[in-house]
Amino acid sequence: MAKNNQKNDIGKLGFEGAIGELGSIVSKIEKGEIALQDSLKQYERGMALIKHCRGILQRAEKRIEKISKEEKSGDSGKS
Image (cartoon, rainbow, N blue to C red; front, side, top):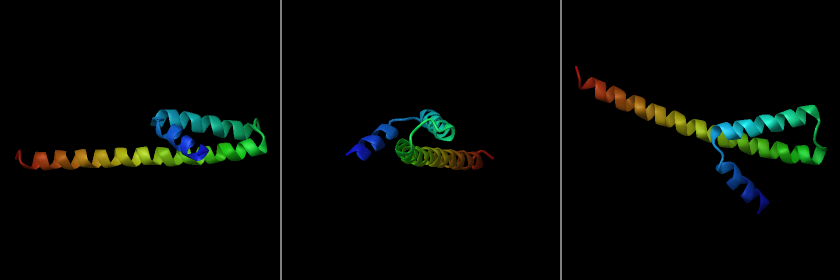
């Protein structure tokens, strides 16, 4: 159930928030500021954040492609 809550928590984050949290996790791990067990948990959260960010980027890319196609089809009728 904790993983479900984690996914829901991450799902509520915007791109910038997820990237910010990911940067914080990486920094803490690199500096050795957290214990091994906690670093493993943070690594898992970081991987989930990366997956979330990729999903956001893919959706944005699809929207841009759709807009571009609509623009091209609209321009072809104006000649």
